[in-house]
Length: 103
Image 1 (cartoon, rainbow, N blue to C red):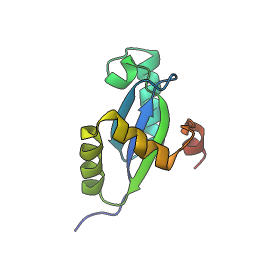
Image 2: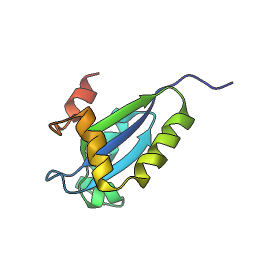
Image 3: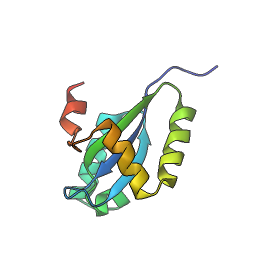
Image 4: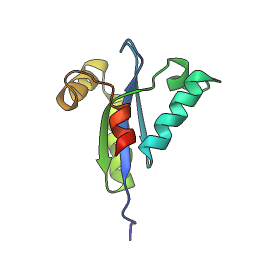
């Protein structure tokens, strides 16, 4: 039997919105902080190297396998399909980091 948790698939972008990064986590606030720390420091990850620290899309899932399936699917999308997904969720591409921190 599966445990009931929160899992998130998210898309980050850089300040100029030229790069997109898709990820999955069980703690979105913590993961955003990790991306910011990497971008400011070692830049060991793709997101850190390209300063993808701005949240523009997220989805919550109850089960980890649903989140993993969604992440894999989104990672296969071409940029225009990722943009359409973001546009449906967040038409102005507002950076949602502060909204997530407040929840």
